[in-house]
View 1: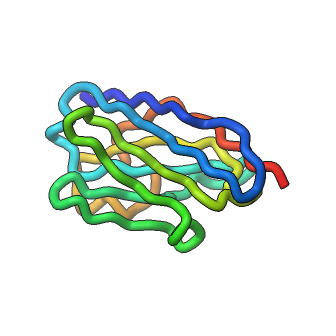
View 2: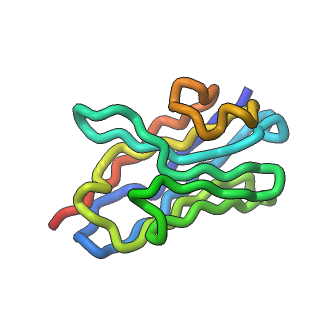
View 3: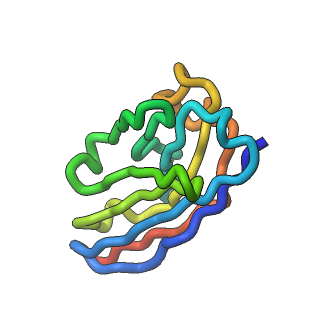
Length: 125
Protein backbone atom coordinates (compact mmCIF):
# COMPACT_ATOMS: atom_id res chain seq x y z
CA UNK A 1 0.00 0.00 0.00
CA UNK A 2 1.03 3.58 -0.70
CA UNK A 3 -0.28 6.78 0.85
CA UNK A 4 0.01 10.13 -0.90
CA UNK A 5 -0.32 13.54 0.74
CA UNK A 6 -0.39 16.73 -1.33
CA UNK A 7 0.35 20.29 -0.28
CA UNK A 8 1.12 23.64 -1.85
CA UNK A 9 -2.09 24.71 -3.53
CA UNK A 10 -3.47 28.21 -3.27
CA UNK A 11 -4.67 31.27 -5.12
CA UNK A 12 -2.57 33.30 -7.53
CA UNK A 13 -3.10 35.82 -10.29
CA UNK A 14 -2.55 35.11 -13.96
CA UNK A 15 1.13 34.71 -14.69
CA UNK A 16 1.98 33.65 -11.17
CA UNK A 17 3.64 30.48 -9.92
CA UNK A 18 2.89 27.71 -7.46
CA UNK A 19 4.75 24.57 -6.43
CA UNK A 20 2.82 21.49 -5.41
CA UNK A 21 4.32 18.73 -3.30
CA UNK A 22 3.26 15.12 -2.85
CA UNK A 23 4.79 13.07 -0.06
CA UNK A 24 4.64 9.30 -0.55
CA UNK A 25 4.56 6.77 2.26
CA UNK A 26 4.56 3.01 2.35
CA UNK A 27 5.70 0.58 -0.33
CA UNK A 28 6.97 3.29 -2.68
CA UNK A 29 9.58 1.03 -4.27
CA UNK A 30 6.71 -0.77 -6.01
CA UNK A 31 5.74 2.29 -8.03
CA UNK A 32 6.40 2.48 -11.77
CA UNK A 33 5.29 6.08 -12.08
CA UNK A 34 3.88 9.04 -10.22
CA UNK A 35 1.89 11.85 -11.70
CA UNK A 36 -0.36 14.84 -11.33
CA UNK A 37 -3.96 15.02 -12.45
CA UNK A 38 -6.43 17.87 -12.22
CA UNK A 39 -10.18 18.19 -12.25
CA UNK A 40 -12.15 21.35 -12.80
CA UNK A 41 -15.85 21.58 -11.87
CA UNK A 42 -18.00 19.76 -14.42
CA UNK A 43 -15.02 18.29 -16.23
CA UNK A 44 -13.30 14.92 -16.26
CA UNK A 45 -10.10 14.34 -14.36
CA UNK A 46 -7.22 14.89 -16.76
CA UNK A 47 -3.59 13.90 -16.66
CA UNK A 48 -1.20 16.84 -16.35
CA UNK A 49 2.26 15.32 -15.95
CA UNK A 50 3.83 11.93 -15.30
CA UNK A 51 7.26 10.87 -14.09
CA UNK A 52 8.54 7.32 -14.45
CA UNK A 53 10.36 6.30 -11.28
CA UNK A 54 12.83 4.11 -13.12
CA UNK A 55 14.89 6.45 -15.25
CA UNK A 56 13.00 9.67 -14.62
CA UNK A 57 11.32 10.00 -18.02
CA UNK A 58 8.58 12.61 -18.00
CA UNK A 59 5.40 13.31 -19.92
CA UNK A 60 3.33 16.49 -20.07
CA UNK A 61 -0.10 17.33 -21.37
CA UNK A 62 0.06 19.74 -24.30
CA UNK A 63 -1.80 22.38 -22.29
CA UNK A 64 1.02 22.65 -19.72
CA UNK A 65 4.16 21.96 -21.76
CA UNK A 66 6.78 24.63 -21.23
CA UNK A 67 5.02 25.97 -18.12
CA UNK A 68 4.91 23.05 -15.67
CA UNK A 69 7.78 20.86 -14.48
CA UNK A 70 7.41 17.54 -12.67
CA UNK A 71 10.27 16.31 -10.52
CA UNK A 72 11.00 13.96 -7.64
CA UNK A 73 13.29 13.99 -4.63
CA UNK A 74 13.98 10.30 -4.11
CA UNK A 75 15.59 10.83 -0.72
CA UNK A 76 12.45 12.51 0.56
CA UNK A 77 10.00 10.32 -1.40
CA UNK A 78 8.39 13.52 -2.58
CA UNK A 79 6.98 14.45 -5.98
CA UNK A 80 6.76 18.07 -7.10
CA UNK A 81 4.92 20.06 -9.71
CA UNK A 82 6.36 23.51 -10.41
CA UNK A 83 3.71 25.57 -12.17
CA UNK A 84 4.73 28.81 -13.87
CA UNK A 85 2.87 31.27 -16.08
CA UNK A 86 -0.40 30.13 -14.60
CA UNK A 87 -3.63 30.82 -16.48
CA UNK A 88 -7.25 30.92 -15.29
CA UNK A 89 -7.87 27.67 -17.18
CA UNK A 90 -5.37 25.97 -14.85
CA UNK A 91 -7.86 26.42 -12.01
CA UNK A 92 -8.75 22.98 -10.68
CA UNK A 93 -8.31 20.51 -7.88
CA UNK A 94 -4.92 18.91 -8.36
CA UNK A 95 -4.32 15.31 -7.37
CA UNK A 96 -1.15 13.30 -6.95
CA UNK A 97 -1.40 9.72 -8.17
CA UNK A 98 0.80 6.66 -8.49
CA UNK A 99 0.75 3.35 -10.30
CA UNK A 100 2.80 0.17 -9.97
CA UNK A 101 2.03 -0.79 -13.59
CA UNK A 102 4.30 0.91 -16.11
CA UNK A 103 2.10 0.32 -19.17
CA UNK A 104 -0.78 2.11 -17.44
CA UNK A 105 1.11 5.30 -16.65
CA UNK A 106 -0.13 7.29 -19.65
CA UNK A 107 -3.68 6.01 -19.41
CA UNK A 108 -6.73 7.59 -17.80
CA UNK A 109 -7.15 8.23 -14.10
CA UNK A 110 -9.05 4.99 -13.58
CA UNK A 111 -5.82 3.05 -14.16
CA UNK A 112 -4.03 4.64 -11.19
CA UNK A 113 -4.14 2.72 -7.92
CA UNK A 114 -3.14 5.37 -5.40
CA UNK A 115 -4.43 8.91 -4.92
CA UNK A 116 -3.88 11.84 -2.65
CA UNK A 117 -6.69 13.92 -1.20
CA UNK A 118 -6.20 16.80 -3.63
CA UNK A 119 -5.15 20.42 -3.32
CA UNK A 120 -6.98 23.39 -4.84
CA UNK A 121 -5.30 25.72 -7.31
CA UNK A 122 -7.15 28.90 -8.25
CA UNK A 123 -5.85 31.35 -10.84
CA UNK A 124 -7.61 34.68 -11.13
CA UNK A 125 -7.49 37.00 -14.13
